[in-house]
Every structure is written in C-alpha cells, then in structure tokens.
Length: 318
Picture (tube, rainbow, N blue to C red):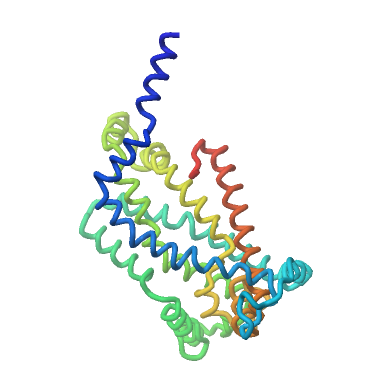
C-alpha cells in the first residue's frame, strides 16, 4: 500500500500541470516561435489543399467553382469501382511497388553493411559520395540517360548487340525488360541515399560489443549477423512500415518519364491514371475520388503492416 501511494505521488509530481506548462511556454516562447514557419508551411501547403477533397463528392465545374458545383455523393466512387481498368492500374501499382520493396528495400541495408566493413575511411567517403549523387538527379535526367543506354540503334545496348551479334530489342517497349529497367534504375538512384539512415544507426552501436565478440572469436560475418543486424532492426522495421505507406505510389516521376504506349497495360499505375484522367481529360471529380481511394488503401496498409511488424519484432512505429 505504501508502495502504491509512493507511485501515485510520483506520477502526480511527473504529470504536467497547467500552470507549469504556461510557465514553460513563456520561458521558451522564442523557441516555440521558431516552430511558426514550419507550422505555417504545413497548414498552407498540406492541410489547406485538403479542402479540394470535396471535389470527389461533387460534379465539379470550373466555371461554377467548388461552392456552385452540385453534390453527387459517392457517384464517382461507384463509377471507379465498377471500372475494370481501375483494377488493372491498381494491380499494376501493387505489382511494381511490391517488386520495388522486394528489391529496393534490402539493397540500402546490404550496401550500408558493406560500407561499414571498409577499412579505408577515405575510400569509404569516396564510395558514399558517388552513391549519393544519383539521388539528386531528377527522373527526367535519369530517363534521358536510360534512353541513351538501352537504345538498340545508338546506345550502349545497341553497341553490345553489334559486337556480340545479339538480336536487338526495344527494351523499353517490352513489359518484362521495362520492369527490370524500372527496378535497376530505382535501386541505382536511391541505394546511396537510402543507406544514410542505416549507416547512422550502425555508427550508434556500442563498440564494446564488437570487442567482446572479437575476444570470443567471432569473425566480421558473425559480428554482422549477431550484433549489427539486431542493433539496427528497429530502424529497419520503422523504414519498412513507412515504405509500405507509399506502396500505392509506384513512382509517378519514374514511370511517367519512361513508359510508352507499348507497355501501357503493364506500366500504367494509379498516379499516371489520375494524371491522365484529371489533367488531360479534365475529369477532376473522378480523378479526385481515385486519389482518395488510393490514400485510404495506403492508410489501411500502414496500420496493418505496423500491427504485423509489432507482432513479429515487438517494435511498432506508433
């Protein structure tokens, strides 16, 4: 009983009081003032545009404006779910995104582990710098490079076909090779930048554990398996859950700059579909409904994946 009373007194002392919160706010008002630009940014550019969600429940007419357009309820959602092509682009999006996670998610982890094993710090910095650079290139530039490399007439691929006598193919015009190019280019562009967080997590591991493992006779491979990987597991879980949140993104910039009519049945994803329906065909309400459905599905996936990861690793993001 006395222990319980002590705990209650401790909790009462630790719980924030209104007066103390106001005193803290007044004392640190200039620090809170620094939050103002960030809060304004999110309210103006993130929460403000959410008013446009109403467009999905109206037959939006630019001449009438949002307020003057008639309400239609869930009409556009019914049309969306009855459209066979919507399920096609959804399947394409899931397929491309899952392949990107399957190939692209472990790549930065493996790259960070390999970088961590480099002895020469100078060589390590050079490799890191080179690997970071592609992240800062836009997909427009990367797409131009890819067109030059895989062109069967004047690119590197065409040159290899001439040298080895291969039959040239239009790689960006075939579904299988198009997906392979998507995956390889995505890994090449993001592997260096994606490894930064893992390298930071590895740097935070207590070096005493490695010294103890060395004394016990563990080699570098066993140290990596039994010390490094378990130590960065929370970071891996967190990034995996966040990555699943964007599973329906698919990579608009990449696909929009690379796809063509020959691979449209395979490469058309929700984002390119929304762009084409909304901005090209000017069906604003319908494209907004598709965007909302995508966001809701992504939210469900995040919640489910967070729950599964929590069950498997006893670590959740929220």
